[in-house]
Image (cartoon, rainbow, N blue to C red; front, side, top):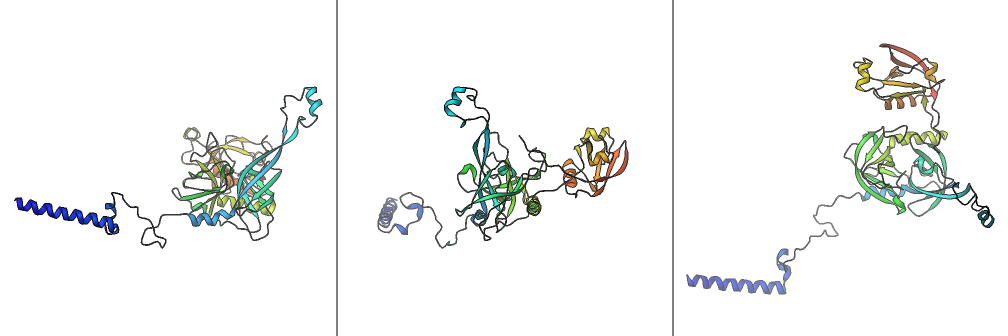
Length: 385
C-alpha cells in the first residue's frame, strides 16, 4: 500500500512540473480556461469564420437615413404682455423696440421625409403650420429653403418643396396596411436637435383611433422611441421601406414613454398626391355629428342586429338638413356601404366627391327609410388660436 501511494505522489509531482513548464513556455497549448484562471472571450474574426452573425438593421438604416431631413422653422410672434408698456418713462428711454405687439422670433424643430428625387418632402402639418421661414437640412450636410405646397390639418400632414436639383435621395413606400403587431420597426428623425437618430421598436397596435389628436385617425402605435423633433420623420420596416410618418406621442412630460403614433404610409400617400396635384385636400361632407351606439342605446332603439351610428346633431342648411335628416335618426349605410362605427362613417363620407348625390339608409321610428343627399365639401377647420 505504501508503494502505491509513493508511485501516485511521484506521478502527481511529475504532472504538476510538466504543467508548470508548459504554462510558462507554451501557454497556447493549454485549454483557455486554464490560463491563469482567466476565461478568454471568443471574438468574431474579421473574415467571419463560422460564428453566427448578430442581428443588425444597419442596411435598413443606411437606406432610409439619406431621405430623412431636419426641418427648422421660424415665425413671428407678438409680445402683448410687456408689463412696462404703460410706463411713459420706460417708453421714453427705450422707444418702440419693446412696443406692444412688436414681432419677436420663435423657432421650432421637426423632421421630414423626401418622397421624390426633385425635392418634395412629407412632414406633419403641426411642424410647419405657423412657419414664416422654413430651413431644410439634408443628411449629407446641404441646406435649402423650403416652401409649403399645401397641408391638411385633419390628418396632420403637409408637403413642402426644396430646390436642389432632381437627384435627391427618396424613400421607398412600404405596405403599411400589412403591418402587424409585433413587427420590428425603426423610427428616424432629429429628436431634441441632437442630430439624426435611429431608434428601434415594434408595432404595438394598428388602427388606433378615437384619440382626439386628428379628425381622421388610423394610427400605427409603436414603442420605438419618438421624442420632440421626431415629428414628421419616418417609421420604416426592417427593409427600410416607409410605413408611417411619426406624428405624436403619449407623454405628460414631453419625453418618450414607449407610446408613439405614426400616420400610415397609405394614408400619407393619398393626402400627399392630392396636395401636390391641387394644393389642398377635398373631402365629402353631409353636415352631421354622430356618436357610437352603445348597448344601452341599441336596446332603447330596439336595433337588434342592425349596425349604424346615431345622428346627434344636424348642421342647419347643410346637405343632411336639406334632405330632411333629423337628430335621433340611425344612419345605417352611405352609398351602400355599412357603417359599423363613427370612424367608418367619417371616412366613407369624406371619400365621396362633392356634388355627387348618394343614398343614405336610415332607421327612424323603427322604420327603414332611404333619402338622397347631395354631398357637400367638407369645410376646412379653423386654425387654433
